[in-house]
Length: 418
Image 1 (cartoon, rainbow, N blue to C red):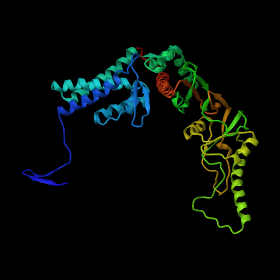
Image 2 (image 1 turned 180 degrees about the vertical axis):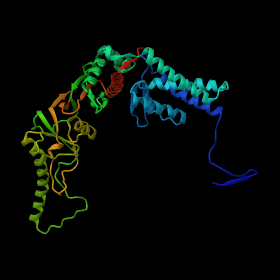
Image 3 (image 1 turned 120 degrees about the vertical axis):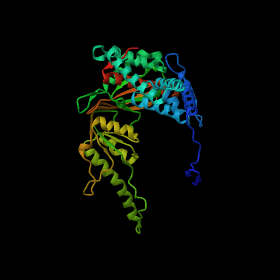
Image 4 (image 1 turned 90 degrees about the vertical axis):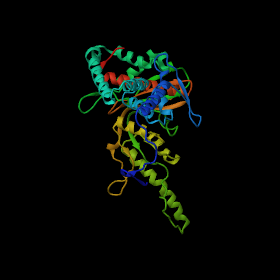
């Protein structure tokens, strides 16, 4: 970087162009309006779905504003702010992602007109903030209605309204009732005694085949996994669940460890010991009282034999997110290693979780492991049925929006008609 010396002294030169003033404001408004025009046609009950194809050829069919904007490669900084706004709305509220983008774009367009009429931008921002406060005050005072007096019908109508522009809108009454029932199933209280409805406690699974109206709500948490061996029982009552994040395959030497064997008989003993290490671990887990074992890693055929003989269910390759949710719901601790402070291997009984029933159920061509009557938090599972992946993904997105809406109505305790 060079310092150019002029009549006013040394000046610092920075690479790039500097733009300011009305030209930039006009560019920003144009970019924001372009983003709003993309999602505008997907708003409301007569909104159209968009088909988006990426570089790889992956197809997404949706009319969810946040999903559309997420898949667009937006480069303009002002337009990117709108994309982030839609994502934030999706995280915080869950629904209304298209509305906030169109509203923000319109506010910017009107503000630009006021700037052209020689009103300073800070005055416009102050006016917008004042209008926002007044609007919120008016809604609270004159329009908001407490939901505790209105009953379940209002919740169903709220869910129905959020679905009206989505793919599930055709069967809106059916899905709205399912969403409200699911949210009531996961009702919990926090340490302060406040009632909470965690959307994450509802697991949404998708299975091909049948019509959308044959989707079902299951009481309990379900994962799309099967028993590791056919000899295991399908159903266990009063289950004690061990959640492991470790391998139950034949124990192997660590990388870099070298064993030099001179006698061939010793080699066979090493192999036997490798099997015995895993056997001892499994025996310790079963001795603690565990009758349902979930692990994120593998279980080999030699190890499965011990679980079958004990009459317990073992499930391998469970996704880590599902394992953590099951552990939270049942009160289990995820065990990474069985090593204790003395250098021995033990399995603590306090690491086990509790559930009333654990069973394997068959749905379509797939198997589901269902956990009912979890000890700590309640859970629910919505199993969606549909013709193909595009339809199921869009149903999942529209149900997520409706679940978030019902959660907000239940937790805030008030609703605005219209």
